[in-house]
Length: 129
Image (cartoon, rainbow, N blue to C red; front, top):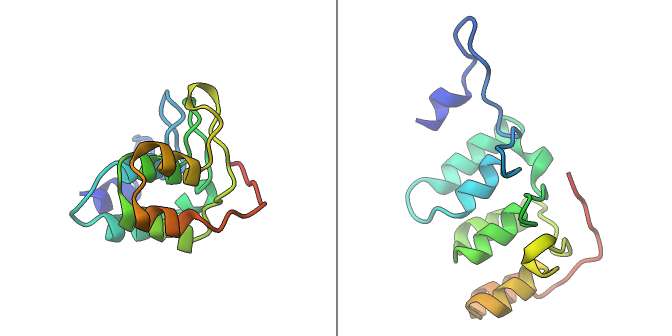
């Protein structure tokens, strides 16, 4: 389980940290944004407890923040949690993602009323990790 991955490793093993990135510059927060159902909120809390909050606005090579991923994959519960925990609504994607905010992504992808209401209050803070 995720808890086992986050515990201190046995001697000689490399520790897993939620702020680590993969070769696409995606963090655990990016990936959990693409998962719906299950214990995602519990996993998010566990990741934040172990330091994932420092990269809540981290941008992947494809230009997506974890909040962009939630919007893209229609994961409203996780998007709401990220917004409540301080995810920036103003970060624009980069690269092939067309420089969109999470709100603009929601407009293009699925136009879900609940997403649009959640993301409608654009802020001017742009925090990149």
